[in-house]
Amino acid sequence: MSTAIHINGAALTLLVGIPIENPVEEIIELSIVIAVGFVLSATVLTVLGFWLSGRILKPISDINRLASVINEKTLSRRIPLGRTPDELYRLAETLNSMFDRLQYSFEKQKQFVADASHELKSPVALLRLKTEEYLQSEDLPEEHRASLLGLSETLHRMSRLINDLLDLSILEHPTTPIECMEISLNELLLPVLDDFAEAFAAKQLVVHNEISSEVKVFADIDKFRRVLVNLVDNAIKYNKKDGMVKISGHATSTHVFLSIGNTGPGIPEADLENIFDQFYRLEKSRSMLFGGVGLGLTITRRIIELHGGKIDAESIPGQWTQMNISLPSG
Image (cartoon, rainbow, N blue to C red; front, top):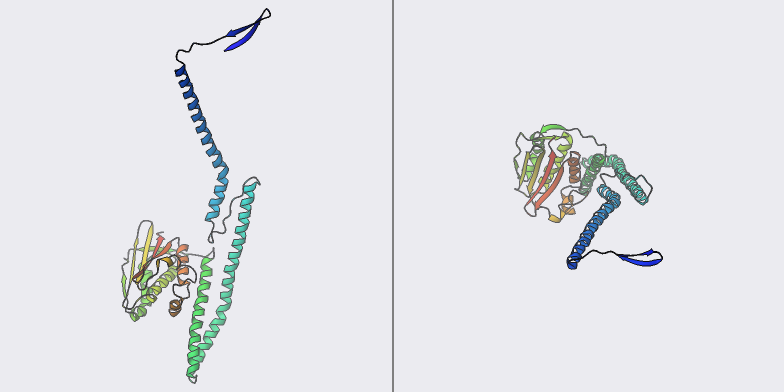
């Protein structure tokens, strides 16, 4: 190091230095210090950058997470607004406004279906009554009788459709009451099997009930009986002659599992996820032949969901179809 000083007007240069015994070693040490400092600085800056970016992007992640869980069943939920009216605040406000419109549209649609079904119920019932009255007439020409029989069947299907739409509208209402109690699963199932005894005999079906009397379910009796009726009815309708219906169930400490399977044409794998949708039919002609309207499994799934459970289907096309239900044990 050098510096200039003045003594009595004369300029003198003062040189200060230290001896370097091994300059190469000193350079290596200095390089190591610089490299370590660079690595530490880069690490600190990287960590700080991730932390800052996480803080900045967290509100966006929260909005994305909340928006992704809002669906047709949770449309009443909204994204919390921030404290400051910034861009994210306005984004959340816009999304909430969109959810408001969607909820209003869904509710109006459901209300329309319920109102229309209710209004149609009485006229269809009156038409059925009049049709059956005409069919009782002894002097009715045969060609008219055949037409009236076809009309009667059509009115019967319309009546079933209207009743199912009304039931589904009630079940989808957020305030639908559900009164659960613990009951033996067989106590619910056996009367249903007795009601279908003639249908089993007509197709010469063999029924295997493998549920023990110890298996209990915590359920709304009337609604869960509707589930059993729908599934047993399907197991008969879509079964082959001389086929089999197998019903099994067991309980764990947390859940009750019920399976109802039947031989028959089965369900293609691509359709398994869709069979619980409203009005979905594998074959429209076959469903109409059996009197189906495409709402039975939709109603079944909704009842299971009201109990906090799940239902799914598995099938081997041409061999076997099985409906699997899991319910909380209590």
